[in-house]
Image (tube, rainbow, N blue to C red):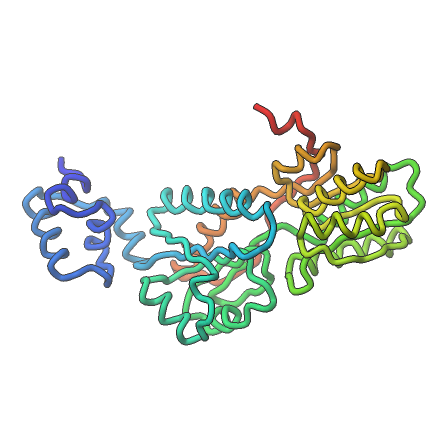
Length: 331
């Protein structure tokens, strides 16, 4: 029995091109389609009915829109986990995905962005790292020309779903745990937040403020911009005046801990995200572990669901409190 690979070999094209011809994708030349169909006829090839029906229903690609402009060393690790999860799920569901970077859309207005995406046969988008300043993307999402899944951005409409952990509760959880473990705590907290224009940063900050009210804490707030260097500078200036340092990201927690080490003083520090670099900070630290692979995998599955005609919704992913040290990282 002939396979799709046999058809591709006879037609002199890639397997993905044969799939596009079978599912009537618009971006295949007439000459190529004729050649592929002739090969299918000669080999008496019968496409997989289930896969073909799924693809023909969706008849479009899913763009993985990734923000690589975030100034943190952690973005490479997180982005790679996002990509791995998305690609694995796409393969499982027979969905064609294509990475697109924010920089590729820079300078485009709403109409130009939509035109570009449609020229790439993009019908669905999974968006990673969108901020409140990305006004063009927000308008594109609102127009509902594409089925969208937003990671950590609480926007929902009929064509758009939101997936992410409960950042507010997670921040409260890890801060509370770190405080309760510290016997010498006198209520003075240094909180280093993320970006001022970030959805995630706002959620985490609200969680910290709620905990401060519940436990009657004195909290000093400073913006670290998700930067290890910035957090280091803030800690040098204010660290010795506080009992505990709560950071809205692991990279900032690493910067804070290294500053404390250089100052030759100890303060409990906690982070957020659960990246492997935390194991090399020199001290154990509490953090919130997110499973970026699973979140991205679920996002692609959700995009497939939307492309099949379902309505947008909110999906809350689980989080876990962990204490990372060097021995957790070595294999």
